[in-house]
Structures are given as structure tokens and as C-alpha cells.
Image (cartoon, rainbow, N blue to C red; front, side):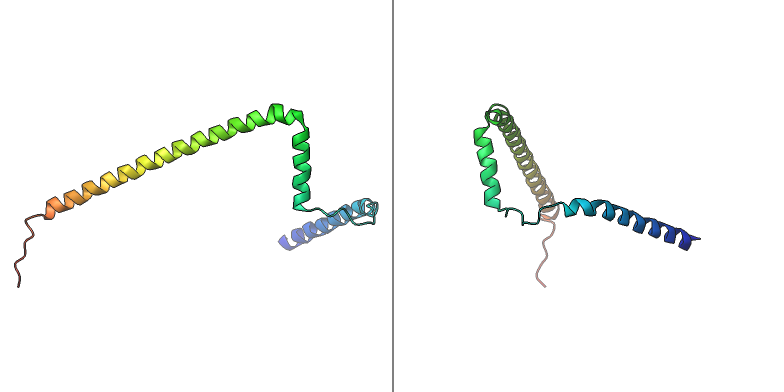
Amino acid sequence: MFIIIAQIVFALSIIGILVIILRKVPIILRYPRQPFEEVSLAGIFEKIKSRITSNEFFHAIALPITEKSLRKIKIFVLKFDNFLAKLVSRLRHRRKNIEEEIKNDNGGDNINPPS
């Protein structure tokens, strides 16, 4: 029973793939035969830079939002740093207390004469 269901699902999958391929082949054949323009990372950055510097909308809207976001990130990082500093201080204080308790429990009572 399960083998028949698996075979039916497999057949439907193959039919679906064939339908998609047959529908997309005409679109693929319409693409130009010449190679596409070579894309380099420097070229992409230059295009983005030219669009940003020429667009007044970006300067009016996006820069204040970016600045505000960076300030919020800075505040978050500083608060997290403060939290970590307090945590380290508490751990250090707790370790000192434990060491003092160990010294007080073992101090003086533990004198062993040489054998």
C-alpha cells in the first residue's frame, strides 16, 4: 500500500517538474545570446554610492534614521557592558567570600605535627 502511494507521489512530482520545465523553456529561449555585463563588487559599490550621493531623499530620510539606530545600538552595547561588569564584580566578590569561609573553617585547627 505504501509503495503504491510512494510511486504515485513520485510520478506526480516528475509530471510537475516536466510541466514547470516545459513552461519555462520558451522564456529561457527569449533571453539574449550575448553574455551579460560582468559584475564586480567594486562596480556595485560605485553604483550604490552614486545613487546615495545624488539622492536628496536619502539624505533627508535615511540618514537621521540610521543615526538614531546607531545611537540606540551604542546605548544597548554600553548597558550590556555595564551589566557584564557588575556580573564580574559579583562573581569576584562571591569567590572571595567562599575563599574566606574556607580559610576560616581550616584555619588554626588543622595543624599537623611532622611525622
